[in-house]
Image 1 (tube, rainbow, N blue to C red):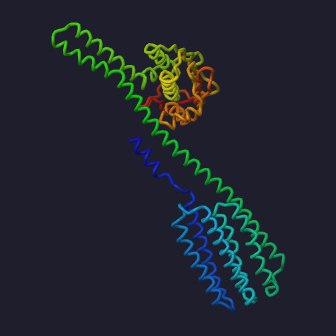
Image 2 (spheres, helix red, strand yellow; image 1 turned 135 degrees about the vertical axis):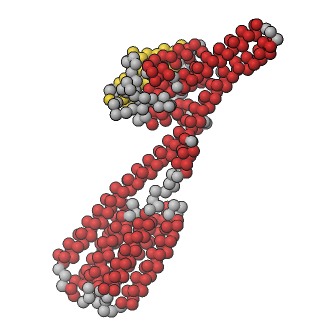
Image 3 (tube, rainbow, N blue to C red; image 1 turned 90 degrees about the horizontal axis):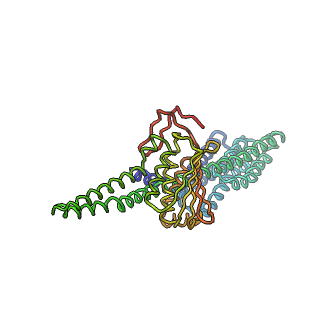
Length: 431
């Protein structure tokens, strides 16, 4: 079930976060078209009205073609093509308002058409800001301001508009353009942050799938290499038991005892009951004793800085990290000695595992993860998911791995989840 949910989440990850930009631009341009049309209807110029209507109709057709292209190709258009088209259409926005304002101002200076039409210049910085590109917004500010001043200058004498009023309106437009440049910077940063979070979410989901696959494989290997072998031996000895051999009975009994012990060891390592009852310190002690009895390694556990019986919501993360780390050392490090240090440090639970083996660097760990060996990567993913840190340091000889996780203590009545992690309620307190 978890794998299905994770894979479907990966498929739902958006490919482009700018898909809403063309819709916003199209809506603002429709507002500009409606504004110009209402202006020509309510305050028509005494001359050249047909020409103004034709110019507006041509602009509407251009916006329609652009809208069809942009809304269909927003997610797959080449960046260069999209930028050139954006600049071209923005130039058309400035041109349409400029042509209508200047044309009506020259031919009908006594009418109010030009004065009303030039208000449309205040929409253009908003359209540019919706591109989320500060460069485009800044580059469009000067042409827009210049195009606004031109009809003001043309109609100033006929309308007796004071220059102070023109200067004030121009200042307001310049301030609006500057504010939209700042808005573009802020919104672009937000969009980039969201895109980065989406990328990290996708990566975490992939890591989750990899960790789940790795843990299932580890369980399969432990079971295959242990208990089934004794079961096969017992099955073979059953033939001698049928023939009445008492020695075979003893061998079957011994095989079943060993099989039972191995199965208990696997269950205890995957979800130790002692971790839930007595805490992390006791669980690590039992784990090291179990590994020492099955291998030739010398394992030293130093947990003097960890109180007896302390239970936290970091217990399962640190326990699984210690188990996975020691398993990797046993399989790959060719080590003879493992040192484990468990303690508390400024509100953090710190687990440090070092060995005297061949060692591994972070670059080598990344290479192994690409090759499908994700044991250490799974530990890193669990630590980061718990808001902790994971550090690998090469020693001479061997490797030192340090996991630190924010520490929160559990009350006595806190329950544990099915995966062994603690379910922290309102009664938790920070250490």
